[in-house]
Length: 140
Image (cartoon, rainbow, N blue to C red; front, side):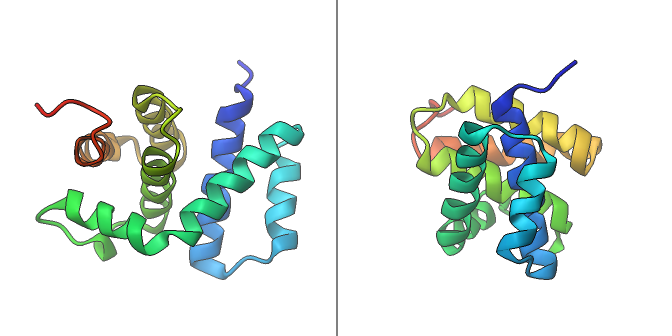
């Protein structure tokens, strides 16, 4: 089954965020990831905006992640899980027009496919706490 354009853009954004945090990837390398993802211009623009915003506001995004982790330290998370959380939390914080449920589902699917299927409960719980903090979901 072919991935929807926004899913492909999120996959590319995840790869770029991971590469930035691990290897300090160049802009040319980021462009290659987008090209390899076979994204149309709209998808490339969405992936670029996700990465740009997450990276520009990394301190705030990480603050939300750390607060939502509660009894855990962000440094203990794998680099791939950290990249996924930064992507999803950034989207929760800065894309109010995207339904929180869509962000959750996309993050969980990316976690299963690209990070660790066993980490989905951590991702779901953390995103839920961030969404409640930002009033994107009702408190439970």
